[in-house]
Image (cartoon, rainbow, N blue to C red):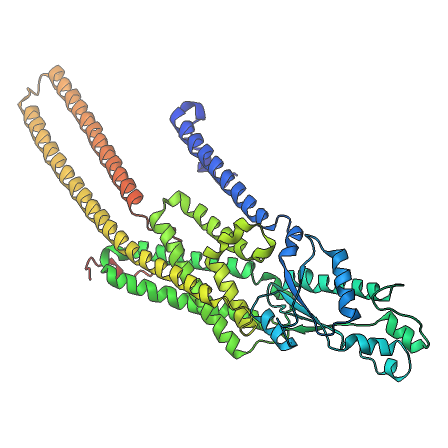
Length: 517
């Protein structure tokens, strides 16, 4: 602390300056309450979307197609009746003509009519019954050619692993018990060979037809950190651009149409490069994920659109909202966007379907469609919503450029007028001072040099007049400074240039010119 000797000089106590303490605590308490309420609401909103997730698992529908029509299908139904509940997916028993072939069931899962499709292979029960008799049928029995699960792991992979795959595996195991138990659906009479015992111990293995295997570790952040970092990335560049515009007084020097075009091109180029970096990192750590060059290009373009619309929307926040509320709006936008894609809507309370309005939900649905090669067909509403947000953001951001340019010119004119008034006041004060000094000098010359008492009074009077002039000058300067602060504060409240970060500006004389285009 001894290095900072001026830190304690000329300080006042709280009691000595009651206005300072009152203003400080008033603003501090107001922000205290607002921020606590804001984050309380955001926590409640976020946690509410995850509330009783397991109890909503019954909203996950899995189609069951029994192409066998025998004991295996009956065992599956018996097992489902014992597992059925709010925390278990709903097994929809499909009519024989609904999905005549497994390919049609696969198409239904791909088109997202169901989260998964479970089917029993035709003649599966008869082949199993023959294998239980022993001999060559038991030796040639293929346990993997009995039951198949069709699902799309790319669709909320961390959720699907638990809600779909794990629960179906539980169902299949329960069906095995139901089949093999005494008096069960399998109608087992007698086992005559070791091979038959082996078949009974493991009558089937669940085969997976995964439309897009997605098991890499980085999948866990596709719908969280990736979206958050994109939003923050746009905010920081917006702050840098605002700082550059403020330092160079661009709004007061350049025609707003040119400012609008340049700002649009800069933001589009920045988002283009940023989105290719994000996509590149997803591909760099895909760990064998089966996505190719076409998916890379499509993902890049979609993330570019998403990044640019968020740049424009955050800019809109900074234009039309009071400056103290911009950080609150930004964090609310981030949390509400991310919450819309934390879980599929089937596992959240119905209220959270308002997430359809947020661009993060639509961009994630579009990415799922790209990554699974069309097996998430929500593009009919996802892309229109994204483009609608982009158009709204571009329109309001362009209008904001004209607004900022308008008030920037008012600020420049006011500052020039203020400077002119200060110069005029200073010149008038100087002329008045010179006149008084001339009169005092003339009076001094008329004083009798021998009258020492009178001379001393004149000197004292002159000194007193000089002190009065200094006090008057101090009052004029203080009044001018307060008026300038008031003017700047009013203009700042009316024209919001947005958050800005300091940027290094070259000491170039071209930036000091007053010419305007």
